[in-house]
Length: 484
Length: 139
Image (cartoon, rainbow over all chains, first blue to last red):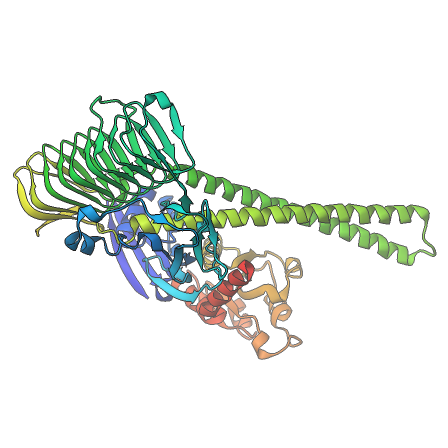
């Protein structure tokens, strides 16, 4: 048993850890505190998980004495998917690759052949007990985990049910929620405004340019040999563009959204969002760039950058603003997935209630029928009316049971969808938040006038800094500058 | 879900114990008269907190219903914790003659109650059991 004191603005919160840290009791020793204040103080002290909101509410309303404030809960780790087709560049080898590799070797198009293995689990899923202080207590491995939920278009689960394979020749990509898909390639010469809205179910290769005011929406990868000029591009996979993005016309509608990574020569005046990496060979200028993972660009100037993990740059200059950390990046499709998940949770709850009601009705009818049978036992002989009555009871119960079974089936279906969504969200969380250590690495100089925003600190560069690394300290949301 | 029976008129200790029990994933059951005890299934009750100074229920009846001589085996005994305000009162000295696990003096301390529950409920084992149930449900 250990005790911790948390000083609040107007009081003292005393925490007692019991059961090896699985249960935390809280007590306001003196003074008062708001729910939000207590919550943030607990999180700051390291108690992030399993907080019991109702108990914190009780303490806010002036409850004297101890109340259980946080409790360990059972959770599952979905395992670590390994995307075979992206072996060349992934999260684990990104930094070493950057030190020794070359930008010329990057290929985000990922061509695959039919039957090629795309995904398997490199770490078996396991269940664990999550303590309020974040500690994971391993319980056991889950062997019968189904990875079919990661299979997207034109992919299939293999015979051994341990990997996902491509069904057709084409180009592969995975989404930020873990789903892997393959689409065949379609090649066009160029795309312009006259083509209207281009919406293909293919991976697309454009031999020349995508011209201004065109609109391209694809579920897969986009490969452009020329330039993308002031066009609206929305792509589920990766974008590889040899000449770069150029929004010279300053069109508001010109935006680029890539579900995964972007490789480009330059980004000029564009609004860009990427779910994974952005790698630029020359410069980013006058642009608004959001990147959930890491960004590599030799020169960044007059731009607004929001990055979840790391920025690698030679020069950052001309009043560039950088928002560092995963909290600043908003995934446009996350809200809808969370909403679906919430709707399914609600539906599941309603179905449970419905099942309970039906079960109660069934039990009630059964009791009535049994009561009637008991009465019959005492009678000398059965009457016709009792025969009709019992028959009606039987028919009623049969119909009810049928209805109950169909509701149960619906419930099982919703539960499996709900669990799949939860796994996808867990994948998203681990891939966007875990082990990211946000950092800006500047090998040249970061010029005066640049601003770096962190959750609890804004760093305005007054004098140019050379050869520096600016790290985000996750615990208190501040920045730390050190020499490279 | 296993239940924990609480028989007490003092709302503050009743609420405190209920909250702790609910946090440990047990269901608190509160009873205010002897007749209501007859509706409980003995096997569902994991342990009992009983205020011996309350006059709304006879302590003998509760002990006889759950741990009477006819109930089987020493392992089947339901742990009964007596609660009291004044340990020198007549009610307490009378109750202490009956079989019980421990006597707790009010005002109660949740840490102390947790220690008692930890011993009698074997909480670590319970977690593994709940996990097994979840896994079997999934398969």
